[in-house]
Image (cartoon, rainbow, N blue to C red; front, side, top):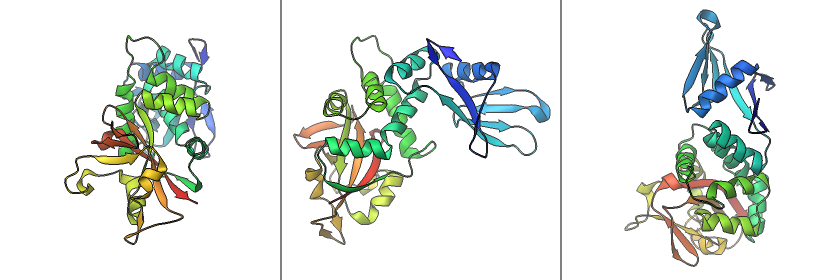
Amino acid sequence: MSCANVSVSVYHKGRDGVLHPYDSDTSGLILDAARKRVRSVDIGWGQNACRFDLSTMKQVKRGSRRESEDIVIEIPFTAKNLKAAGEADGLRRKILVMALDRIREQQFLSKSLDVKGVPYQSVRANPYLKSGHSPYENFLESLTIATAPLQSVGITLYDTILETAATSPTVENLRSLGKQGLHFVFHGTDEAVMDDILNTGLLPNFRMAGHHEEWFGTAYTTSLQYTRNKTKIRQGNSLLYFFVLLSPSPWIYGEDYITCSSNLFQLPMAEIKLK
């Protein structure tokens, strides 16, 4: 299916992992529902009835077995194509999901750390980030609102996110993202709770006494002093978090720090082991 000179394909994924294309009518129905932000649409009746749930991207057959398959919307991954598809079919949230999924890939994270001069030994991308995961969904909603279409001209945060996701992180585009409110930062804490925080995010109940926000380092060396193992500061092979923060919640406290008072604007992307 074509929209604004961009080819958009819609599939359902079988249990064997194979993508099966929908016919043009069904593809059009799904894309039209996505454009109108309809949560779900139904076709057929009786044992042949089928529901397309766009909130979970699932196709559910309404028969006795209620078989479920993933709905997959594919768009050629270039910044120009992504932007055109999002504008033409109202798939802006879906486009942001695709961009965010690309940014949290192992290869992208590793290149981002290279750009930021981090001497890492290994990077473990957050295994919990997926549809339905609370920190992921909260951050995606905040990002969707922050990148809503405006009447302003020039390069927007939405444009820069798509450009960065479609190419590769560089000093220039990471700096541009920061100026537009999306920050790649670090956080150090007790290593015993790191996996829990990858799963739940940083919870307000566990802030230090008297603090109303979380603190993040714009350079890994700033956060390193807060990384502990068995109550002792590690000197080597330390573990740090790699976070993405979204303004307007973050505000610059100093040259090396950013604070964030709401976990709706925070996304733990990876665990980094330093050399």
